[in-house]
Length: 364
Ligand SMILES: [Fe+2]
Image (cartoon, rainbow, N blue to C red; front, side, top):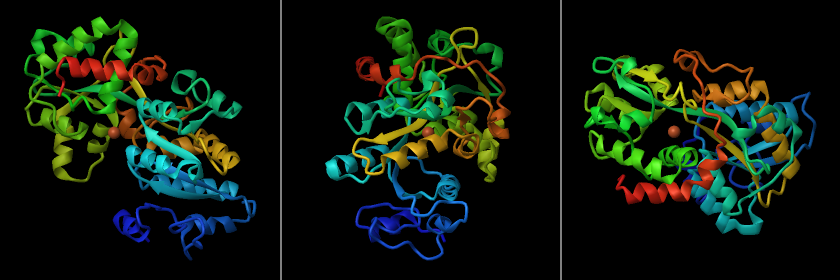
């Protein structure tokens, strides 16, 4: 049975508890629902407890992940969904009594902010340290990346040849005047990209680049990454900077219009002769007042297993962080590329500078 998020919110007075367990921990499990029922699996230990998972990821396919975890460990997953700001706000108002065990969101910049604001606690896990490359997690164990996203150039196949493209920096050259689409500066993906350039080249160089990029905008920023790809396909702009999975999603769409969009654009991985294409993560950490800390750590360790990586990353069209797990066919069709190995922690550390810079140069 699919329960709409809106109806659950109404029913649970402000909570969006989506997995089978009802509105609070005290509510008995709903008969016939998956996560609760899997506790009866013969292989799962009895009374293994639960975790309260605050997740800003919104993929139906993640349910399979939680059910498998419950099947294997006997630990029930109570899923509380919302956007990252809502979940942070909720943890803030719950204070020390917050039932949150695990917080999951996208973008290292956001994870870093959650850490800075005191919502996460450091954990030490050899399993996670071994499985996840050091540049994709916090060095003190406050948060870990569980999937990767590449910020790529999408171009109009009729107007641009791949050999016209090279780097993010080159998009600031005069030849791209009036041809670039990108979403607004309040978007964390763009903030992290600018933060990475500040880390790499210093504020001055980064500012020069951003100024040039803005001068080449085809239109004032609007919409999300999908809208930028659609604008490229429609010829409103020739190139756009977007996260790769937005295009992977369009490529797999059943909707004829979306398929048409996907066929009109190509994907290009910038900075291949330089440091590599900008990589970000989605990830999570253990909440600061986690009442089920041991189970929370087990859950994070589970997310780094090959089985979970296939679901967690692939079904959302992301790149797995575990090297021996392959991306799904739509993503693999984009080809292999060199990734920037820049430490994603710097996206958080340089975020305030990035926001100031973007504001200063008038990126709307
Ligand atoms: Fe996204």
